[in-house]
Image (cartoon, rainbow, N blue to C red; front, side, top):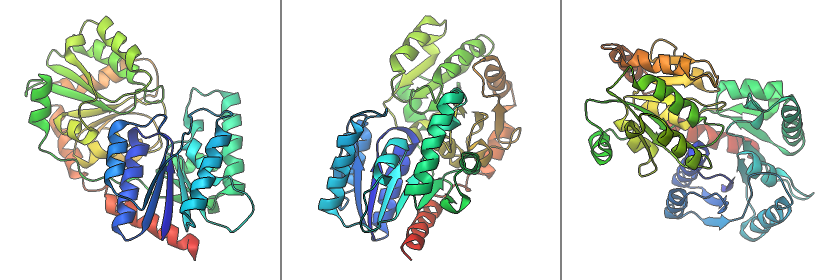
Length: 373
């Protein structure tokens, strides 16, 4: 098949998914073209995407927020489709690329696939008006311009149904990951000056409102007095980085919080004893999946995808999706007490083989073929 994959944000889980999908489809013999936006492009993402040597790689400037710039972006996307096409499938990822790649003029029909990677309407802080506006846009695009909408968790599937998107338009394909390498624990800790015996909590993700990293910093400040052997490693970048840096420096335990982007998520996860995901909303976090595949205990806020990787009280703890840092700090304290982490780690390791990347690629390929037939 000739496939066109389109993405606007390059960081975090959507970027990881995009790279894995392009690589996987190419390995299965398909001609893959990729469109990405250089506006928010992460350097590592562009390097890795370029190194894939796809059949075609195209940069189209797409802005995150809706605006007049969407018109030239849509026209540029159409230009790529004319020059590099025809394509058998066009697959848009995340809201902006998903909208621009699906809106089309009359002509030969090419199946359009859309993966939201978390609907904007899943944000509990969006408000009634915002939820109504974004929900109406998603429903119109899904009903009129989408051949299939891919949900990456059962929670996201259920949310799509509440938006009024017809079930016959929906397909559930849970994200999959390659098992993170186990050998980077010592090198990462040594590079950051973290003792081998320290209890290391970790965060991996974009530093954005959605991921709520400030919740974790506030919770760690509460924990640090009661758990002197605890450290916090935060991997990521984004618009909140400077504000987060100021929050860390203003606290009493800045020397025990490591904020860096020098390591990939899989490298960093190997160094962690537990992953904390304090997000306000998710569809299926790649950090969750990678930590689960690595057999790491989890502390997750009650968001989409949590039920896929977490059995509360067995391989980790579920906390309320709330800006109050106290419940999150108490969950981290539970892990820090002598002998309490080991049972969670054993249960996490027992579940670690459930999150296979090959399955995700195969199910997506089968979806593409079904649309063509």
